[in-house]
Length: 281
Image (cartoon, rainbow, N blue to C red; front, side):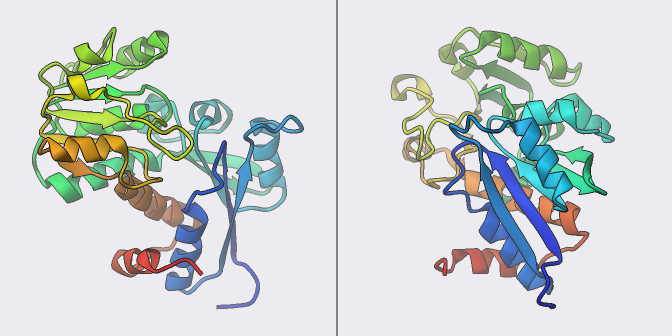
């Protein structure tokens, strides 16, 4: 390993001060024998810049790439070239690669990360009918992943009804119907799985996206929120006997996949997990 940083990376989003992404990527680099720096570009409340300007500046400043998080994933997909047909269909990206001062390709490791997280916990079990709460930048790749995992039906609810309708129209297939629901109760009715793809539950937006009175007893649940790991949603579902898939698993697997895209390197996942569990600093 040299003193010079070999891979300069970053994260663009709102309210990302507690994100563990810098630690994951810098540790992954260390384990792989390469130096990595990873900087947060928090746009929350900023009046002096925009997402577009920040993305362009990162490219011009020589970064190898950036991750993109809430609320810019769909916007990023409209700005960055996307070669992968699956990612074009998703319509949101969380990983952008730069070359020669410009963005050259967009990727979605939320999709691959969710599929890996689901399989790690549920092995070969099919998802069944799934209530998907949230139709935005993380809900869209999860919906595609659920289809690939063999879901029977995906029922989408979002406080923005038009967004839920758009996801259903874009992503429904003959094999896996996707329908927009008028309320959470309709989405939850008789479902086998429940997915929280909203920010509700994270430290900035505390609460449970699913009211206790209508949660029922799903077979499994997944929460995209990972800060904190044990959200109100996860805790309540666990009390009802559900198999719980933590958002930390999505965070880990999407990060490993993004690291590979950024650097061309693989990392020992067991060693990375162990390192992340150690106290920071």
